[in-house]
Length: 273
Image (cartoon, rainbow, N blue to C red; front, side, top):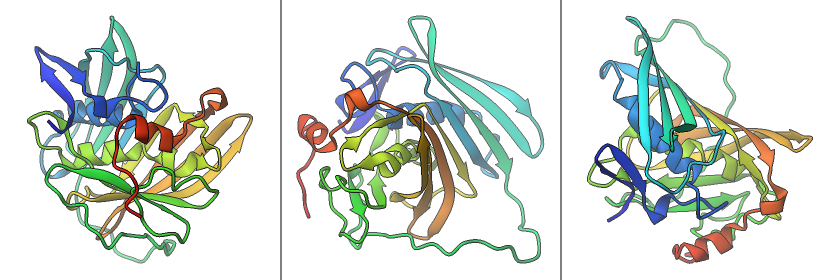
């Protein structure tokens, strides 16, 4: 089985793949965001609507225990639908998210300034049907599966083919994007001493859904003071950029994450660099 969750009797149970690098007793933000997106997507009005904004508040650790998902429609209109979702454990909301579905329409006339961006894509395709470990890139170095490769102060990117979120259910483009959006914390806050910030939220804005199974995220900006970091990243696929991700993060220096040690503990593949 290659999936992050199983589903039985209305509850979701995490597999080993969904466990956090911060603690084996809690789940990774990527898996949490993917699961919230799964619930929110059930409220999509139809194929003409784009999930243009997804925001997750990760204010409490989601425990490595069975999960209940609750959701509701907040606003319903011809061009906009807003829905909320929450993860509940032991009768308490552990994380919540909201999505804004916007109807797709024609672009307005005229030209608008936009920055030129170099978005790196690996020559090797991660297009296997069951997903693949991510590739990482730091500065001008080559793409690699090596989780120790980011121990440097260079700009980072990650390239992903996310496996199934829920056992027996194909992952959707929106679930894939929401899952990868939480990797903003990794590419923006991974430095010479590991990852020392833990994000308390993530907001993903999309002009379109990703094409294909591959999806990249590249650090765009980072500012920090007083143990609080604000970071942004570009979300893109092989056809170009599709949106941006923004996170707010708190210093977690006492539990700094060594990604190489985490990968070894999870028995993830070694470097192919």
